[in-house]
Each structure stands twice: as C-alpha cells, then as structure tokens.
Amino acid sequence: MRAFCGIVGSRRCDDFDWQRWSSGFASLPAGHPTLARDRDVVSGPSHALIAPDTRRAKAVGRRFVAAIRVAHYMAALLYGTGMRLMACIRLRVQNVDVGHRQIIVRQGKGGKDRVVPLPSASIDALKALIERVRVVHGEDLAAGYGDVYLPQALVRKYPNASKQFGWQYLFTSTRLSVDPRGGRIRRHHRNETALQKAVRRAAADSNVSKRISCHTLRHSFATQLLITGADIRTLQELLGHSDLATTMIYTHVIGRGAQAVNSPLDRL
Image (tube, rainbow, N blue to C red; front, side, top):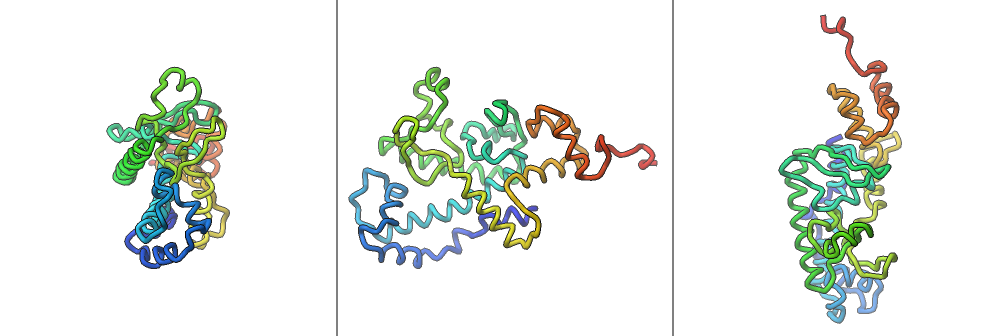
C-alpha cells in the first residue's frame, strides 16, 4: 500500500522538464485558449495584460507539478485516516491539528463531526502544504480576493471569517473561479475527479487486477486496524459509522470471526 500511494502523483518536481514545458507554452500565440485558461491561475485577473512568456510558463509548470504532489498527499491521507473522499477534499487549514496529531472532520456523512488520527508520515508534507496555501492566500488577498465559501450559518455568526487563513481549503484549487451560489470570485477546493483519476492510473501502473477506487483506501484503513488488534467500537468512531453492524462487515473480510477477536485457546 505504501508503494501504491507513492505511485499516486509519483512524478517529482526536480525531474520535470521545465525547458520543454516552457518552450511549449511560449510558442503558443497570444490568443490561444490554453493561455487564456491558465492566465488567472498564474498571475490573477489584475495581470491579464501581461504577454505570455517563459516566466509565466514556468509558473504554470510549477502549479502542474504541485497538483501532482497534492494528489499523493490526498491518497496518503485517505489510507492513513480512513476519511471519505469528499471529507478529505473539503478539509480546511484549521482542521489539521499537528500538535495533537489529529484531523477534525467537520460535517461528515450524516452531518456529524469526528476526529481521526494524523499519520506521523504526513506531518512534514502537510506543514509544507499549509505554508503553500498561506502564500497563495496572501497573493489572493493582495489581488482583492481571498474569499472562501462558508455555510450561511457561519457567515452570519462570523462575517469576516471567509477571508481568514484558517478557513481556507487545505487542498485549494489552482485557479480562482466564479461561485455559482452568489457570483463571487473565490478559490474553491480541488475537484475530486483529479484524485479519482490519479488513483485509477496508479492502480493500472501497479498492475492491480482488482477494481481500485478512493474508497478502497478507506476500506484498507479499516481492515489494517482490525488486523493489528483495534477495538471494533474505536473503529466505528474513526469511520463515522452510525450503526455498529456496518463496521462489523470488516470482521468478515479479515476472516477472524464475528467479533474479530482471538480465542484464548489460541494463546495457550
């Protein structure tokens, strides 16, 4: 599983051919739709009149490689915490508690909150990601944006929270977009289809014959905890299941009986 998660977004920034990427973009005509599409990603609407050049192409390239890395981080969290796909995608910066090594999942399935463990192996990567979000958010604020979507109840209670750093999405989008709920220009979270495609590609590259999806990583988290002796009630809380019967399904998967315990006779 470690190797599989590593394949998801395995291309390194140092290995990226910047010159080839840059020359490909720099050779495009000024009105090319690719440049128009990526214009706001790199320099923001306030710099819309800057002609395409190598500097801009390199910036787009860096965003491209960063997106590949983020797919790896998300896949690792799905396996390391047991979160559902959209719970991971919608994480806010303040949901990551590095000091207590935990992640707070807000408004999960069924509208419930819960706490999941933060894998030690992901701490350094998440710290770097949070700093990157801080830089991007600062650039958005300087350009007159920096607003993020919040539920209406929170907007009424905390009118200025939408521009605060802690409320920004952890896996933030690479571009600004128009929010259809009010027409404001905001930076939303990443689209979940990017991670889904990355996981499918990783499964193909790993020569895995079975069907693999993002939810498979959640199932793997649950079965591995049971194999290592985790309590079924603890697992129920970590997965956010309302009914214990749903969690009990995993005991049949690992083939250790209805209660997923070892008989005392086997310890003699």
